[in-house]
Length: 264
View (cartoon, rainbow, N blue to C red):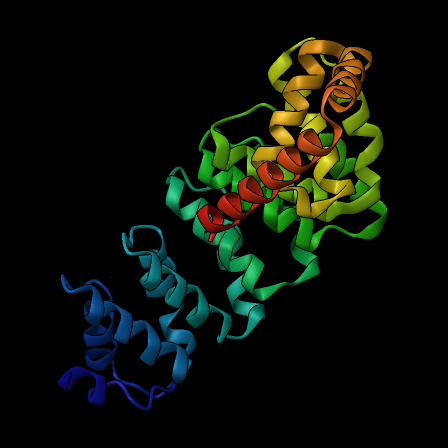
């Protein structure tokens, strides 16, 4: 593409006219042109493109282009990039908040932990909240992990399967500090919250279980109660121990495999 040649190499001495060309390419109708523009900017980082990159992140509809925009931002000096990204966390535009969080996860600066506020962890938009959960787990200091776990469990039972899976993954990634909070949530009178909490604890103890299998098991325990579920399992095993165990193992493996494929 002719314009790609025009923008390389990019440096701080670039004229306004050429900057304008690249900025226009970042908003071109063709997504492949936008992708190439973001790649060119990232390959030849220039602080002069900070604002066009951030602004485009807030409105870019293509996932791959957004990811390239975030990559280009990581190539700029963090001392100028981070303060500008922080502003986006307070934006009224949903995508601006979400992409700013995503970019923070790519930069990985632990100093940004303080910017992951309770409002972001509870954001009304599921995608923003999911990203905030993931970034929080990456950035949280060790001595604040327990507090983060307490905050995250308040979101148990929220959203559809994908949202709940994201929250479970975040809690599992936090490790053992989540156990007390999950144990309390498992006794919640809301069956959706209790089921999600129990399923997450099952995944924490055995990550290979598979999310859907963990949910099914948790539902059974919540419905029958721990003692009732144990009695039902014992009765099934006594009736046909070999068949029951084989069927359960096969079903768990199949469900875990399907969940893994779906999450890719």
